[in-house]
Amino acid sequence: MSDIVDPATRSRMMSRIRNRDTAPEMAVRRELHGLGIRYRLHNGKLPGRPDIVIGRLHTVIFVHGCYWHRHPGCRLAYIPKSNVEFWQSKLEGNAIRDAQNQARLVALGWRVIVIWECEIRNRATLRERLVKLLAMESVADGITE
Image 1 (cartoon, one colour):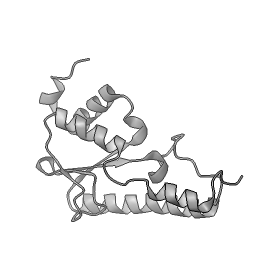
Image 2 (cartoon, helix red, strand yellow; image 1 turned 60 degrees about the horizontal axis):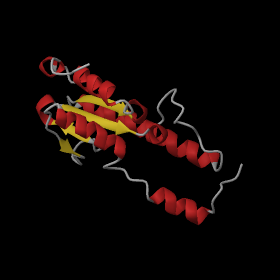
Image 3 (cartoon, rainbow, N blue to C red; image 1 turned 45 degrees about the vertical axis):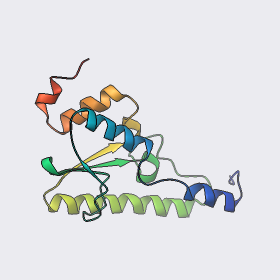
């Protein structure tokens, strides 16, 4: 199956995809802020340039898009039908690089959390997951069901 737009249009569309301040990342940041967690963004000194760095907890959070980072078993992690070899190579390379960066962070003593785009749809579930992952019992008491 061929693409529905010409290569120049597809290139322009793909170049507009952001790698920071995405809607899923902003949702996670809002929840962290609501929980009283302070953080830094996109620390270029750490492997993989984590989306969120919580220095006090020595924790980094990556907010991954299911498509770009190959969320296992997710319906959003599909391979495009055109230019299959290119996309398969590119997307697998992303997943390999993610695993390498996460291993380097762990070796440096950081706790790594990955939050997938599909997990962000329900804010209450996201909040509960963040509380659990960050092991914040005192904050958990304040969550309303």
